[in-house]
Length: 442
Ligand code: HEC
Ligand code: HEC
Ligand code: HEC
Ligand code: HEC
Image 1: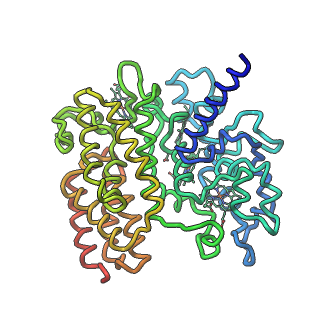
Image 2: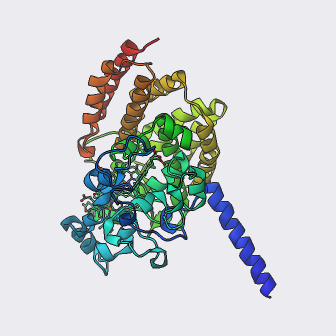
Image 3: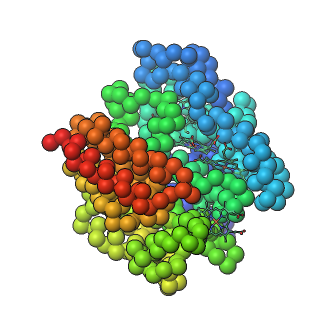
């Protein structure tokens, strides 16, 4: 009997390990087994709390100062004490205030289980170093030894934030949500802001407390903003499709509405958009939030051109299956699997000038063909265009000043979702296209 139990446990553990491996290895810091030590352990002025950067160190050493002074993660817990949070909790009828509810704490601070909290850990400190870099208990001492390597730190529980897929899973766990935690339509209707995230853009506006230079690359491997953007899109789509298939992807009679395009429901009736026509599902249908899928269509053309047509077709089939209610979950699984297979290809791909230019023009042409008539697609397209145009600028493929005015207008057009005008967006895209053509460096 004991043997059978053990065997069953082993099977359960093995399949859990296999599932984790399939999703991209390391457990997220919140669920890791080591103890989190809290920000006090990193903040000493001889450690990461220096006011000035150190010249002879390979990291900046002022990370704590950057984080505590300018990073919103240092204030994310205190958000839970504000009026808006009180209002949300009241509308939801939660039994506890926001700063006591795991529902909110899971994203607004580092919230490991009590047994994984070290002595200096304070729940009130917000999204601290341990929340991204992993619980420091087993690596705090060894990571400063002269022979410390990144691989050894990771083996001792440091989270591999340098790895695009791992970083995407980490950031997206709070910024988009996953099967463990997400901001449901109910929470949004109670007053929570809509989520909007793009990995490359958000990595830099933090502001970054790190510098990618030759030394970083030597210690940690390659860094490529376009690849990070592409991985971010793939992981977002994967998480959303997984949610759609899970029991948490339902809310009463309906599927969970945050998985759909907000503006397919939330716009005045007089404002005729007919965006459903573009996915061939006919008028009056609730569209899946397909912003990332639209981006992946461009990405797949570069990283797996043989499969790009099939990918586009399967996405169209997904929209139709949702409209008709036939096999939609099976079709969601099919698309999710295609993305899972695409991720290692994106990771291995070295984005070259031509790929990036083709993606940029592809994004613009999709926009001109009315593919981003809904707001969320347009918003992602703008962040994508920005990442890709910056990449081209850095690699001397584009004179960025030639696209700057159009870029500014694009940002203005998507600044407020309620004010979004597809026609203004298309006009700015046309200007952008002209800018790309005149600014291209051969
Ligand atoms: C899945 C993660 C997640 C969960 C769960 C979550 N939030 Fe948030 N919340 C965020 C993120 C990320 C932002 C920032 C959004 C942005 O600006 O892009 C945010 C923003 C907010 C804001 C607006 C920020 C401000 O400065 O006022 C409030 C208020 C808020 N959340 C309250 C709550 C409350 C209350 C709960 C629990 C009922 C909650 N959140 C649950 C991730 C989450
Ligand atoms: C929201 C997530 C997040 C938080 C919170 C965070 N970091 Fe980071 N940190 C990153 C990312 C992403 C990188 C860049 C990738 C990398 O170097 O692994 C990074 C890089 C670093 C680096 C390495 C730079 C290099 O050249 O190798 C140090 C040191 C660092 N962070 C220290 C800290 C300290 C100290 C804190 C707390 C005060 C902190 N971080 C909080 C995400 C975070
Ligand atoms: C444990 C949850 C959590 C994780 C992990 C996390 N964030 Fe956040 N992040 C938040 C919350 C909550 C806020 C909103 C704070 C506020 O509004 O004051 C936020 C805010 C931000 C902001 C400021 C956005 C704005 O509107 O100004 C940026 C940028 C950001 N996060 C980037 C990242 C990146 C990049 C990563 C991954 C390296 C990451 N975050 C990981 C929870 C998280
Ligand atoms: C399938 C249609 C549908 C989709 C998709 C949808 N919503 Fe809603 N939303 C509704 C309905 C219905 C209500 C309830 C309106 C009421 O109470 O009068 C609502 C209420 C709201 C409210 C509260 C407004 C009020 O009048 O009380 C907010 C805020 C909101 N939704 C935001 C969003 C966001 C953000 C998204 C996308 C992430 C989204 N919704 C997606 C149908 C939808």
